[in-house]
Image 1 (cartoon, helix red, strand yellow):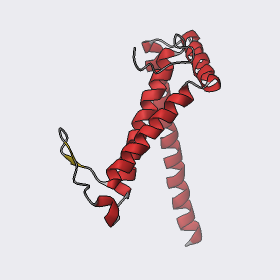
Image 2 (cartoon, helix red, strand yellow; image 1 turned 60 degrees about the vertical axis):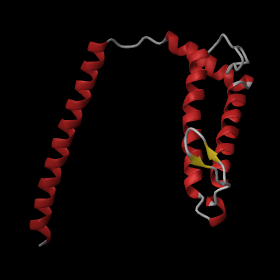
Image 3 (cartoon, one colour; image 1 turned 30 degrees about the vertical axis):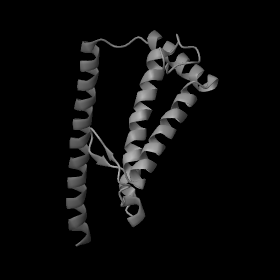
Length: 142
């Protein structure tokens, strides 16, 4: 493969590191587009006379800065995910997640129902107490 995302221990923690990479790359894209929309100065919006052929995007200094920022962040993320300390942390986390005993669907459903019923019951008790106390203090104070 010409571009391999994982250079440090490529056979370990593959899913967790690739998931982290693509999630952080998506956040980097959001950051670059936000940076692009931030530039509203006259010099940053002037067209350089170049148009991206397929996308029909005018190349401006703001576009160049946003693209450079995106690629710098992606390269930094790739380097960070291959740093031994961080990569070992993610590898160990993925290994631990494989050992977790996950609840079955009926257990999850029952647990969720217990939480919902408890929250609704607490809501009723607190709303009732609020109503009773507000009526009591209306008569006492006034």
